[in-house]
Image: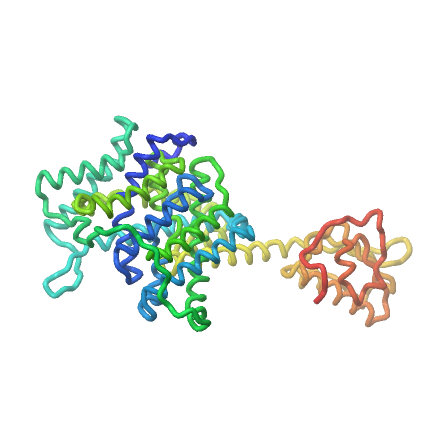
Length: 509
C-alpha cells in the first residue's frame, strides 16, 4: 500500500505538501505523548516543533521526521510524577548533551552492529505499538468520568470514517500523484464530517492546541550534585532510546529511499535539538518512524519536508488551532493504520520457517520486548542474543589436528578463531600426558581474537611446563606474543612467516 519506490531526488513541491501532511498527523501524536508523559499538551507540541525543525535543518537524514515520541514519554512519566516538569526540562537538556557527545565520539557507527533480524523485530514491534496507541481513540468518557469502549452508532461512524480514509489513501494515487493522497484523505474526510454534521470525535476533543511562541527559560531546578544524581539516570536512558530509535529509523529510511544518511551527524543534531528544547519548555524527542513513513510515502525526500512540517505545526499552534481542532480523529487514525500496514514487515511472517531458528527467535523476541517494554531494551536484548548465537556457532569452528613430525615432535595444527566461546573446545583437544617432550603448536590457520584466547594459550603452556615438556608456538601474531608472559621464553620466532594482524587488547592487565 506504500509507494516506496518513488524518486530518490527531493522535489520542493512534494516536500512542502508532504510536510503539511506530516504536520497534521503530528498534532494528535504530540498531544497523546504529552499525556503519556504527564505534561501539558503544549509541552509535547513545542517539542515536536523544535526537535522537528532543528533535526530537519542539521540532521544527517533528509526526509526523516523527528518529534515527541512515545518511547521516550514512557520513561519521563515517573520523573514528572515524582519531581515535576522542571526536572524534566533539565533532564532533556542533559539528554541532548549526552547525544552530542555520542556524535562527537562517532558512536553512531555502532548502529551497523544491529543484525537484520533485530531490524525486522524493531519495525514489527513499532508497528504493533503504533497500532495499539490508536486503540485509545476508540474510547469515550462515560457519565462516571471513566473511559469505556465506543458502542453502537459512534463506533460504526468512527470505523466507517477510518475505512474511508484508508481507501482514499490507497486508491487516490491511481488517479494522480500530484498531491499526497494522505493530505487529500484528511481534508476530504474533514469536509465530509463538517458538511454532514456527523457526530464523531475531533482533535479538539482531546485537547486545545492553541498557544504562543515557545519562550526561553532555564529549568527551575537547584544546580546541585543532588539534582544531577536525580536526572542523570533518566538522561542516560532517554539518550540511549532517542539515539537507537533515530538511528534505526535512519537505517530504515536509507533502505526505502536507496540513499545513505550520516549517523554521527544525526546524533549531534538530535542532541542539539533536545538541548534547545529543554530550554524552551519542550519534552524532547527523537525520530518518529510513523511520521517518517508518512513523509516518505507522500514524496518527502529533502530537508524542506521536515522544515515545512515543523513550521506548519507552529502555525497551527499560533493561528489555526480552531481549524485543526475540527479535524476528525478518525481521519488521523486511518492514516496511522496505513502507516502500520506499511511499517510491519509482512515478509518476516513468511520467512520465519525458512531462516535459522535463532534468527526467527530474535525477530519475535525483539518485537515482543518492543511492545511490552521499550525500544532500547528490545534492541539491546536482540543484539546480545544475536551475539551469543554468533559466538556459540563460531565456537564449533575450532579444530585441532594432531600429528608427529620427522623429529619426533608432537605437532598440533589449529584451525579457526580462538575466543571466549571456543577456548573450552580448544583446550580439550590437547593431550599433554600422551605428547612427546617437544610440542609444536601451529597457528598459521588460526586467529587469536580476545583476552580469553590469550589466557587459554597461557593455560596450555602451564600444562606442558608442569610436565617438563617444551611447547613452541609457531606463526603466532606479535601482539599475542607480547602478552604471553609465562610462555614468552618458549615462543619460536618466525619473523618472515609471522602474519601481522591485530587483536582486541595490547596488554595483560
